Length: 545
Image (cartoon, rainbow, N blue to C red; front, side, top):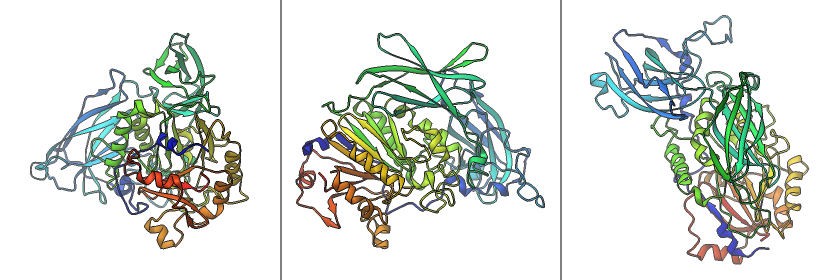
């Protein structure tokens, strides 16, 4: 096996947030009882938003100013951002014809209390907010509510804002293809395949430009498995396009841009991006890998607070962007956006990661908040996905899996073979996924790729986290017992997990015994050059080193 110094090639991202276990919080938009909304329009109240047109220079995000006034202000007043702007029309499907449809049946895409950074609002009734919008293929309106989140009363609605081209191609996400010299480019737009032909125009420096066609996917409200994704959380996802750039030369820089050819022959273009192609398998060079889990999305304007997670999400994103020249590939191992059934949040997540994902491969795994829903084939019968049941995850982000519904795959990067498991599907002996995991391990060329890495969302190895301790398993039940023979047989080097929202690492564990005498374990603990920051990823050395 490779010598221990190679471990320096794996870098853990600090999420700069701490917890004692799986979060038990609510998606912030779920705190709003939007179906209880009532009209309380006040002629003296107003909401005004500027500028009217966003993205005039091609930007896909922009800050806006929202001014408002209410003659009877309270500390519970709040501003909701709605998109599409015509949110109060009768678009609510009747679930029971004996009941009146609610006034509102769509949640805002974000909200903020009217008194936020307006300390005198409850006295003066006047306030101003700076909010950040991202292009989500529709116009926007801002609504002032009284009555708090649980008894919302619609007081006033603003003018509408829109991006100059709401349908523009945005938020490219790179991923390794099914071979080491292939790059998948996925992006979002408002153009259907019937309306415009999607493609990627790309080239290496000095070479002629070439175009690669893209496929187009989307999904409907009926694709969702339950509420809120199928009810108040639903929002049209637009169209998701994926193109494959093939026969790339190792380590070469490529430039690309997203394109759509309209039926009249004209073109819609994104701005230009660039990436470096993957190294040749076995190439002996520095390869820098960042692995983290459970990041979610944050709001730079302070809206939609999700516990204390948003500062960590933004800090992680900003740090990755700052260090991007020193990172070759990223693995986000589950619990991606925490949209939890509020589909608008996926645009905001892909916008947040765009500076990273447009430049280096952004590989993902499936987590409980991405996939789990009763009766849909997930291994765990809980409601963690908010009714999404994996559909947005599988559509928004490409992985080189044989079947996207079965979100396990392998990918090779230089001296690494990564085997990515899907803990939300059964992994136990005799299952299809178990066979995949063994095949991924057994087919690794350890001469070319001495580092065999196992990645999964839930902790299938060992964790001393509180809730695992209460269960008495110190792992995801049946995880270690099901897989440790494979880890040992194929000499897997390291396993990474997310899920528990704590940083933890262990020495090699096998058959419930700790191998604290392992040379790499001792080296890891004492070398001053190994400076790992607090992370949300659990690291486990396996005894097959």
